[in-house]
Length: 112
Length: 153
Image 1 (cartoon, rainbow over the protein chains, first blue to last red):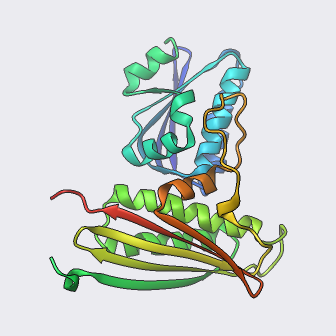
Image 2 (image 1 turned 45 degrees about the horizontal axis):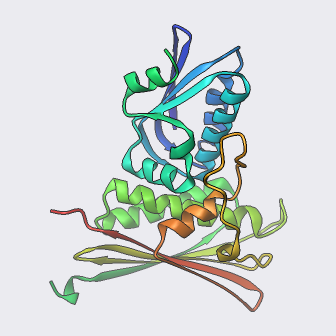
């Protein structure tokens, strides 16, 4: 998994590329959870180039969502491919996370 | 369309508990599915199932650090004119564990209430056609059938 991170105007955007699987969790945890360090963090995950997410990856996303809640921040995702959407639907994540169709949508969801 | 167009391929692996061994087995399975005509999207769905099953055995069948912890991963990939079907099974001599008897996680819980465990088996149960567990001669065997229809041409 490759992660490209950009921080602009108080929003941290992580563009994820590849598989959010067992092998990627350490890297993903470091990059994504690290962005919740400051006060009221606003974080977006660009999922368009994510080939698949396994339960190991779901764990990272859930931890990020918990961090966002705990620190009065916001987390939004966008661009989930079909294989990723399926996993989010089965696990119930689609119901409790802020998921936008595109980047503009995701920015709106976090109030940016 | 006749049964002549059905092609079956069997692949068996002896897998160790470490991440590199698991990644190698998953890479071989991915190749086999691509060979059978699976689209990358369909392959991705199968790989989620395979990763969950394999990592589950590797992590929990034996106490942490126990070696050798070798288990088998067997697959039968069947290509038909209407899609691809894979029977995937793991077999280990670890502690008895029936994945089909696990409690279903509460997928309606809020972010704050949700726990991070138990989702892997839930994904396997939901993404496959059937699941069978047996314990014989001190060995766990867990088999599933995964199926994907061919994309409309």
